[in-house]
Length: 199
Image 1 (cartoon, rainbow, N blue to C red):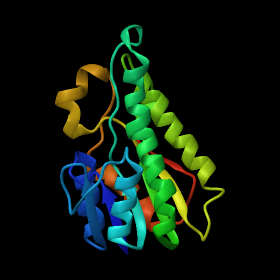
Image 2 (cartoon, rainbow, N blue to C red):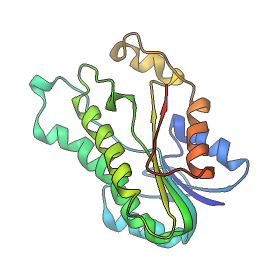
Image 3 (cartoon, rainbow, N blue to C red):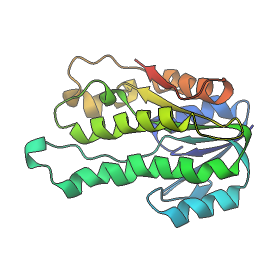
């Protein structure tokens, strides 16, 4: 398969690239690293990337920024960060990317455990991640030509524990390598409209 992976420089992205790269051609893209540059918040940037890469069998996103902070101090502008970046950025990739996928291709987006397990300071992340899951569920019944779409929703990564442990009290962690298996399942499997929870 020819796979386009956006966000390959991140912890999950690197693990996904190693997993799928062992069997497939993986083309990477990111805001500041990878084979190509792309800004998921801009239609023109995503369209240019897709035109440059050409037809692919799978599109994966492990990218997206969120705002973390107390709800009592949060502004609509801060909340909008996650809407424009992680949510609309990945939705934009799916909407434009479906046109460059081969028949039977797949789209895999990334949400997170906060969709179903809210934490303090995480209202933006919970809203965005839950919306991504709902989008994929709805899009799956409309995508043409046998194109599939799934969402991966990992819990806190073991590799990120030092940085994020105070925000996730009592959460168990998973390795990025284990999370990467869910992306493999989404790309190489047959299901659609699913959220794969890696807990």
